[in-house]
Image (cartoon, rainbow, N blue to C red; front, side, top):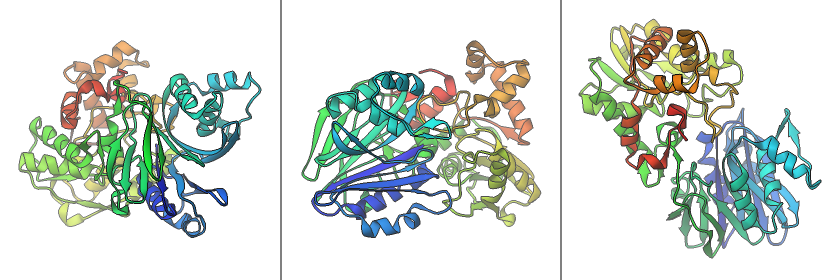
Length: 468
């Protein structure tokens, strides 16, 4: 995943840029960068590895040395960005959020014109550099951005910093958000809507699917009007989004609370306490507790909000270790208790298995698990949710292969996605056994969509039902 922020001000923008990017730290764990433009000194750019230190620590020097009234920055899980490009458009900086599934095909098309060289890292082309190369195939930024959005299989939102202003372009289907803020001295663009509130901005507008605007310190000009066909990622509300954010006018915290309420309405167990796996599971658990009347409690706490996400490390052994280390039990609230835990999802099963085992080791009598979304059956085609490279790392796919004796086809997966089918029930039961849960009940897709509260046709649910 990743997040970005931009500022166009009638004063130095680096303070706003520094903290605006930092507010996206929950969306990335590996790379971060900032680029600014100063009319006297030109472009300045910095990229750092943030795997072992937070953004603020790594970019303290740049926050004091950089200066300019236009700037963009990002937090990324993978590629180094923003990148600085010289082309027939002039010099510009670009940062992106998205995923390109057909990069090899696009690269061959561009290389056939003998117009671009690509930097390779671990055998992969930097996707942001590829987007810049696509844009450079056209005569101006507007046509270049539209061309990129048309030929990329996946999704691609971007910010482009030029000497005249900052282009902000939301991906064609609106799978990820871009929101604009305003204050007396200018404008900003942000992935997360809360990131600019403490910097003195108020809401200006949210870009629609495929919309392209250009920000200057004095104006926001729409260059391409938004389309009508939207497929925003539902997982933004369930997991990725910060609690204080909103997407399409729907609060992340409110949506999670609604999820918990609807989970409780379909449940029949009577635990002693309800708990959320921090951080994203907490609002779900509060909604469940208030609806069911079962007390909410915190039988474990997260050691630090910036502890790496358990599904991010490359090696399974490291994922297992992090899953054990990140949560600290409160024994007095566990011993002899029947617990119901709500987590945002089950991906590989690593974290919840480890969590359940230490709860039993701490004296828990029962551990009932309630994921706040349906079983994840498909790897995301549109966002870099996880670069595992294989859907068979999903606990659901491994269990289905065991039950069927082979890898499932599309028809078979459709049966396993149906919460009223016998195959679905068998899969859920088997997952619960493997992960040592007392009971397991997933959130239903129809209930989760109701919790969001916008038309289902505007939501991407591919990772749960395989439907585009």
